[in-house]
Length: 393
Image (cartoon, rainbow, N blue to C red; front, side):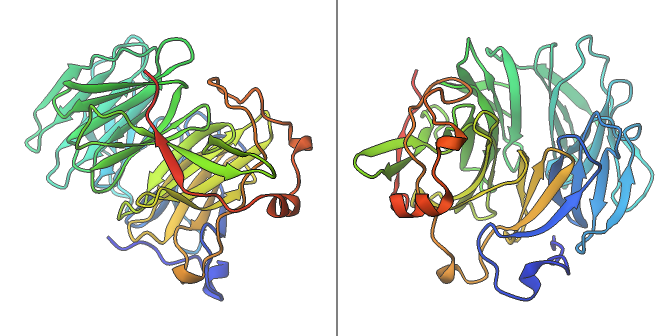
């Protein structure tokens, strides 16, 4: 499918783009955690549980094409595989909302759940097959609908305490479930399409984000300690390796996690060569967006965000990155430079801080104690290659 061109008011319309350069800002109301996903006809932004429009479809110039109210889409979903818009409700189950303004159609009838649901993910295939993962106070469930319309469900064996993220593989052959295990530890579980548990991986910190590459061969996990992990779906029992930054201070070499604060969102480029990650630390008033080379395990560039990030999504041609944010905002950024050989280098390393296993780094210096951008550039060299370490068991 063809992605929309750059907005006409984008800086990239008149000069070469740099990696992660901000091209446009979309505002949907004044509150709410906004998620942004690309579809065939534009960009969808959606936010559940707010008084604003629940879903808005934008065109290439940043104008609203149409919107759906919270009554029409109380729990909006954009499916993986074929990117379609669905609305999940307690009473009617899953409904398909056509982007062209056609009539709403039932997609999957669901029985009532005593505990409702707090997290859901859908996968739609071109042949009409549909997968839906539901999690809440009730047990984690995997629903499927065949192209002929028959449905079945299976309860998944989830050994964690709290769900945080769900993700399907591109063809729906795998389901990844991330969240909190025991105490402050994290847990990632991998299932096949039939709901059988393939592997479990514990982490030192709660898993907050998960994504699968478009090729379906690897996955990425973000944690509350700022960790960023890469794993292989070809060998699901192999523990994911931690992506850590090897940096150099003024006197001593030290290592730190990929981000300060919680890694809230992760996404792969269409060819799987790049990994994007976004993080936020309320304690240190810091919001970060980074892009990594998955082959070289090297940070390519990192920029600061104005608002806390919520979601990441990359256009199918790999040119645009959509960043959903709090306060009802979304940003369009350059997912790749116009001339890769002339792109600026990665931002220099941060001052050292002591790692912890909690949601924040207890040993990190306060924001007021951190040097400015110019001082950081003088005091430290560019980030070196990443080194991998598996999650502790």
